[in-house]
Image 1 (cartoon, helix red, strand yellow):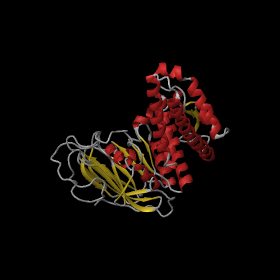
Image 2: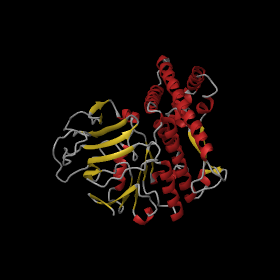
Image 3: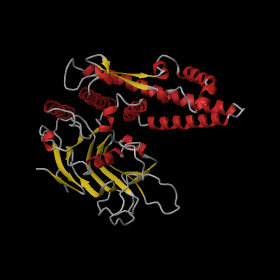
Image 4: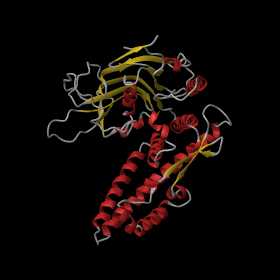
Length: 410
């Protein structure tokens, strides 16, 4: 059992991962971490397995985790794995599961109080059924990881997001949808339904059938779900803009962001009745059939929208800011998201910060630790240099991570 520290009594209500257990997950055959209510710093060389621990926590939220990995990709391979224990049962055994399986379980303080969340996959036999992710709450099976969102919200900032402002629009849409999902657990279902409906439409267009009744029916579904997706995004952005406006300062270590959604559905959803907007989108889809058939995809809709981000103090696009400014802006945006989740749900999310100090000088690192302490959020942070976390408070526990081993520091 590892060191635990209780949170200060004046912390705001925040979700906590009090005990985390991994079995056969990435590089970890079996590891247990028990921080209690404290924030966590994981220090170690690149490749030691620090990010794998954060990724395991991210599987306690709907979706494919912070690396968007497939279920099979995160399973540890080799080194004499054996046994057939059930994935995600929260047991504290020796970590033996069949090869190709993995499990993550956590004892949390969440939206409805203490709970045990577990997820993982069982080994797939030769010629057996497709891999299915199992999810459990208090050891009882639930339909999917979407049920976890009723107990726990998770936000994260990882190095791959450093290109968020300069990379493709798809990454910004994914970032936006994760923000929506943190306050609206049903949003993931809408996104999946929209993707399925669009695939159906694209197939029908490719087949080029003369009977348009199937296309009419599919486009009806596309429009209905698309407006719901756009409405959820627009409402979340509206609330986040308000949160940023209420807390922004003219200067500071983490500048404020101006944000908006670039998409005609998101722009009009607030001022047009949903049914009328669905009718308009259906008409546009019907008019665009020839064009979309030639393109091989649907060229208009919320699946093509973009999240516009402005570096607020300078009034310039975030993509035009320096690398350091972009990192600071992204931190400020994620902290605003954390505050918004707390305001809308009554409970701050768990925050995962991978290699967070990489582009920060000592003053900005200290400012980040103060901001986290002021929020009262439980943060799980990683880095290669223990000195980068010299300014963390007594409410944070630190661990040295080496391949296959983790020990408290101090």
